[in-house]
Every structure is written in C-alpha cells, then in structure tokens.
Length: 332
Ligand SMILES: [Zn+2]
Image (tube, rainbow, N blue to C red; front, side, top):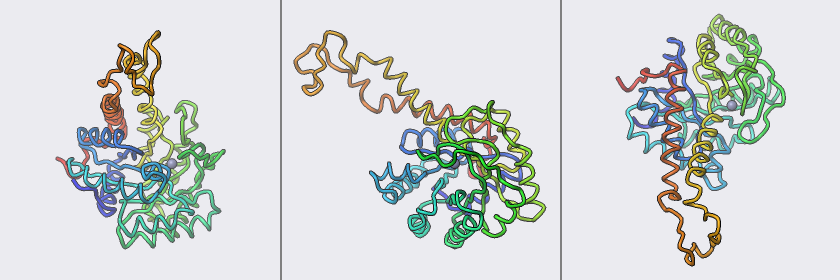
C-alpha cells in the first residue's frame, strides 16, 4: 500500500477511537528501525504510523532538515509499496521556529500529519500558532496535532520541560474549538525519555475528563499520549479506554537498537578487534600479521539484520498492547 495521506489517516484514527484501540506512533531515524517496524506491522496486519522529529530529519539529511525530510518521505513512499498495510508519516514536535519548514512539508505533501508543538508558549499564542498551521494544512488534507500542557523530560535531545503541567479539561475544549486541530496531545503524567511506568503517577482520570469534556462539547478528537516508552502493559490497556488513539514510542526502539548491537559486538569482539599480542595495525589493515578481522562480522549488514529482527519482535509486542493488530483497513 502506498504511503497515505491525512484523509486516510483520519479514517484510521476515527475507527480506532470508536473501537477503543490505538496506534504506537513510532519514531525512527534510519532504515533498520524503519524496516523492522514495517515488517512487524505487516505481519500483525496493523496500519503503521511513523514519526520524524526535526532532529531525525537533520540527521538523515546530513545536517539539513528539509533535505532529510524529503529523502525519508520518498524512501517511505517507495518502500511502503512492498507492504499491504497503510503506512503514514507524522512530523513529531515541529515547533514555531520550524514554521517555514512546515510550509514546505505541507506544499510538497511530505507527511500525512504534523504535530505543531507550541505547548511551551502561553495559551493564546499556542492557539494562534496551532491555528495558523491548521489553516495551512487543511486544503492539502494533512492532519494537525496540537499539544496542551507540558510533558516532562528530554525530547529529541533537548529538555522540553523540567516539570509536568497537566492538561486542563476545560482548556482542552477551548483549544480544540479555537484551533480546529485533528488530534490533541495531552499531559497526564508520562515523561519523554527513559521513565518507569511504576514510578509514574498516570492521571487516567484526567484523560477520561478531557475525553468526556470534548465529547460533551461536540469537539471529539483522538487524544495522543507522548512519552509512553516506559508505560506498563496494564497502564496502556487502561488509557485506551479514554480516547487515546496514538501512543508515541521512540526511546524503547533506541534501547533495543543499542542493546542488540552491543550484544553482537561483545560476542564477536575478537573477530573485529585484534586479540592480545596482535598489533592494532588499523591503518595498515593488519597486512603484517597472521590475524585478520572477519568480514562476516564487521559487514554492517550483519548487525543490521539482528537489529531489524529485534525491532520487529519489539514492535509486534507493542502493536498487540495497543490492540491495533488485525485492524488494518487495507488488509483482510
Ligand atoms: Zn513527544
């Protein structure tokens, strides 16, 4: 299935909200994680929401955000054709300073949805910026996610907020009404980065109040939970009941990536690193010694295959937790 637009993504979220399941919206920065996620979603017959932060685009674009976004968007578009599921791309935490880049992304339809994060601004300014992006994106059919409240922790290498500010249900209604957003990210106690579900005071009561307030005001939108890498399975099950249809995951994949690579390189240490007694003649590529490094182990594809497999296994479990398995709109 080709990489799909916001109109299709809207159908996906609305069905999820009606039926009480969600999507793990998964950040990636390079092909191993991307392919692991595609394989897992295809296997589990779940549609896939991918995410790119500005930092990830900058990394992929050799230091240039828009080059990275154009490259990754095209890469996903072509690669997605290999799979039967629906594949979507969200731009994660794009900010006020990125408005000119958002304009390009909208004009060239490089994403299915965009999160404009102006949550650090005062309420009125958050409304103004978010609404501006909604107006810009609407005619191209790109969905817009806004954020109200502040989520504690480190997001995309920057500390976004030292403290959590919980989202207010009444303000949520006003925010959705005034901005016209399609998805609302709320702060109910999760944290960006490494966190432990058992230490989090997850305010599920607040998620319920926000969802109810929006429904009562006839402003119902799917809710988004950021910083959900540390959540326990039972916490995920519970929040799905309160209209949260998108759960952002990034940190967990990063750990699986590093851990898989580390385990592999520890196991194959001496087929890459000269053993004791062999001079470390890296510049001469060991031409003077009997020992040679093993190409089978240092070929990047060797570790990459394992990383893809591990991301696939991890993502399959997470898809099952979000209950989106078997729910693809495009595969029966
Ligand atoms: Zn986030």
